[in-house]
Image (cartoon, rainbow, N blue to C red; front, side, top):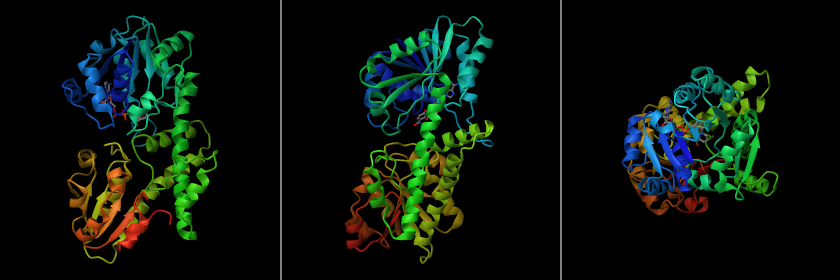
Length: 434
Ligand code: NAD
């Protein structure tokens, strides 16, 4: 099938590449000229495990193309997937749909045969209806269906998740639309649960899922605080909980709070929809509040750990909101670093991340120093703070660190280091939930 993907970000690019790999003819469109120029030249614009080689292969085979022109991209398409951003409105925190509306308004002009407009962006319930109205008003002759196709990929595992999704949700209100989308996903027949639901249910599934996961993280973080007070250990508690199959082991890692481009904004958008519909979503509201407070409390912990040192030097390891990605949007690290500098202007921070330094620089500027590697960050530091759960950090050579650091202190906000070894080497080791 001929598929157009609008938006070549963390969702659009892996989606376009994946669809090309399973045999479709794909055109990816973005209004960002720099991104399209780079992608056309074979230069990848985001870091995602395994994406680069798959992208190059399909580009070289001519199965995926990139364009700035909406006309060129969508005119021939059987299915147009919309994967543009839906950031939070700065004041109300509802999902801001300006990119979605701009994209579909432009698309409407080029619809010349039956076409599916599949919304992969996370959008408030009812947006599919609004898009239908926009296109009908703009181009009354257009023959089309708007389908909700929520995305559940995990950044860092986007390629794996494309080929091994837990489920594919298709929110379509007509049989004709269902059949078309089913055809696009025929590769997944017999491999994955494909669930057809009403469009509004599909839009709700995305928010309900992300909000649930955010609440689960918030819950385990609250339990970690409780463990610290009561003399229990959250690692043991989480392990014990996880053996209950009703609870499961995933999303039971306590840490510095959830971040990224999805959970913070989607919980806020869900809470807004609750308010607008007079529904009490107190669990979600509590998670939002607790998660904001948690990041601040992490900064407090760091400052407390070096309170006895004049002009302390911090080696801050991890800037991405999680491992496996270069994405720093709403990363706890960014919030914590800003808070640290706000509370103590004399603090010296050297930060390092295996993939996310460039993105962090755009959010933080030069308020911290950026190291090229772990060793450089640790040199002369009073404390090592682990903020992202990168594999590289799990393997830190503590014997070397012991020699190059000025003081032997570790604050492990991800509970990934070998506590026993650190203590044996003379480190003062603190972690979450113990
Ligand atoms: P992103 O910011 O990485 O990418 C969006 C892209 O859309 C940008 O490259 C931008 O230039 C482009 N764009 C915006 N308006 C456009 C227009 N009118 N025409 C052409 N291009 C346009 O965003 P993302 O992280 O890929 O997220 C996209 C959507 O998917 C959001 O709604 C998000 O909530 C949802 N989502 C994201 C993830 C994730 O892990 N990032 C997971 C599931 C769902």
